[in-house]
Image (cartoon, rainbow, N blue to C red; front, side):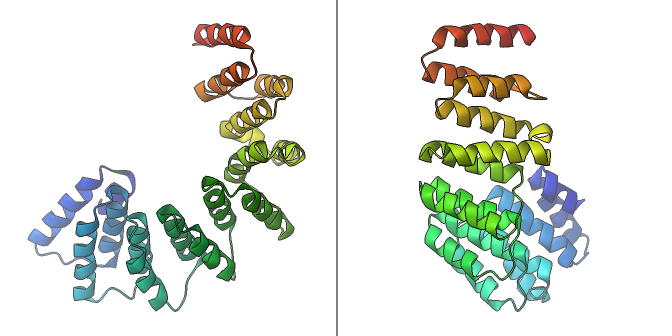
Length: 259
């Protein structure tokens, strides 16, 4: 029950159950404490998480992998990277999840260079590792570096997923890298992620709009297997951006008629 609430909410319920459990004299184990750290991460409650950290030290569970990952996720999500680093440095074995959490934590705090340094130190990376670092660079307007990292990702043989595509297409639009964006479009169709994820279609419509290729954006929109409100809004805003406000009004009426 505690794990279920800590993952899906309401997160406060996990702490209520934990308190009830202790009041009944049931001592927590690592499978109880690790989900509580997850709940603290979701709520961003630093002091409560530190109390759980003390509890872990008292019962001697700090060596368990799930607990250490929980600490790193908790401290990094709260922006307390000094404490996250202490736990990270004490780990003899660090899997890709731990590295990704540290990179994301430093980038969230604004220390993208430290995140990039850790990324370069990784012996094994996942697609999530690449996506995280590319996104961090893009968010700080280091677009050329981000696009360069995307090319490096391809050179290493990693296959972009839907998150990669949604992250890289706006970078292509900002840099005017139309050829790269068109390659991504082709890849998204051949790999199936264009069909499976509506966000990919939305990103393509936005990319072509911002690249001044409205007819292509309209064609992508019409070919999308599924659409949502964001799909319509993206196309309509692109029309306005390209000086086609009247057509945008027509599309708005069409969207409202379709419900």
